[in-house]
Image (cartoon, rainbow over all chains, first blue to last red; front, top):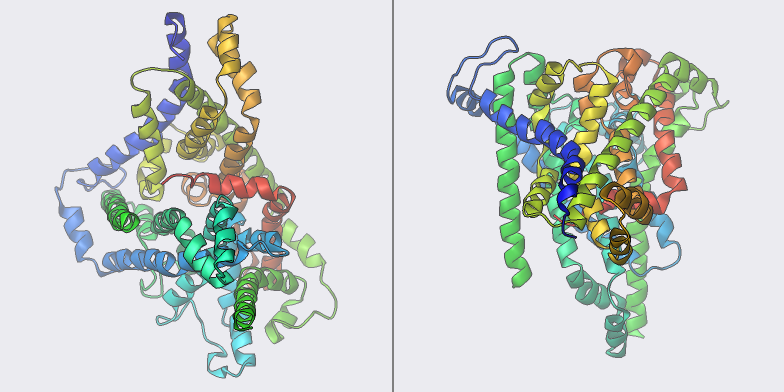
Length: 290
Length: 278
């Protein structure tokens, strides 16, 4: 609708709250982050120090480890969680009896807060009373009787990243929703040609929800770059920085008031996110057109 | 015959996969509930055996010890206010963008929706500084403002797409009858867009309810602490009273699960709606 002259004021007024908040909490913070990353700001005074923060960060082992760990999280999600989600979505897309119940149940971890899930799984991994050790002990793997999964340098990262597979339900639901839009005609035609269920799933359904599958990979990467609660609440980045991730790193810099250094880490994180997105777009786009 | 056989094999495979993931997703929850009904001695002795007597007083103790009622009320107040403001602002902006022609509307829409892709956790230092600058540290208003703002890109996106899908005729008729800008928004658009508002609102509410890092960053006093931030204190508060801690975690999960079971479809659409476009 074209705007009447006397309604321009209303239009601006309707946009204003969103625009002001967006400026205040998106544009301004990013500029602020960039500016303070070149200073030694400690909450009281700030001096320009050039690229010192960046150089120091990349020379810190724990910071490089944080980046690598974030990449582990992203890769695990993209290569294991999302494909598993696809398989379950394909299986539930038959809409055999009770599929809605399974969908609902698998979605539960997505509804519960990360903080609660972190407490829950910390209990599962606990050395004294944990569920995991108890099960392993009972199936004969008694070496793990008092194994501290989250406190051990060798197993902490694997335990953390491994349990995150319980988020498979979220991606499954997104892909499952997409399968509902596929026309029955394809399946009827395939049936006449004598295709088995497994052929229908992999040659009809899977290719038709490809774009949604790619979308899920992008989402998985974004989510895992932001990873904070699990690491912070379950291991706090330890033992020996083994499970460190970027946001926990920034948080630690914040608590010791090394705000300039933390800002630089933030800039690197945003740049990494942008790079990963562009890279994925490129890979996935060429896939789509081939 | 061979075809039948392969079909059977496939359906066995299917149920094995589905059931094992259901177990993976739900079993820990069930175990937590079971464990929260034991005594500490029973838990350390055998984490999986049924308790002799169900210790329901674990729950009353936990609720008192951790002040769970206060935490839940705080979360409710903050999430409700933030969701209301967020949906109000986002729908106003979406109405302006979806229904009117002005030269910078595409730039505006693109800019706001690009916000969805920003990894916001990278911005905790500036957020801390801005909230302190506004003198809103450790206030409900500060947290509400941040929650409202971080959800704006997704809400604006969902609502704009939804508004675009509503037929223009009714609005145009009312326009010709002299219905002004504000009346068109309140009387025509909002009633027609109720399902869209509900979807965006659900997404936003769950986002606020489950949020942890900003609550930890921007508040410190117990009076306004939210349930999620409160959870992180459980380990200290309960120290070696594991079952008490489990009970507290169960109580803090309960509201989310109840709401989810009651409004399954709405919650699922709400939580996946933000993913319509990358």
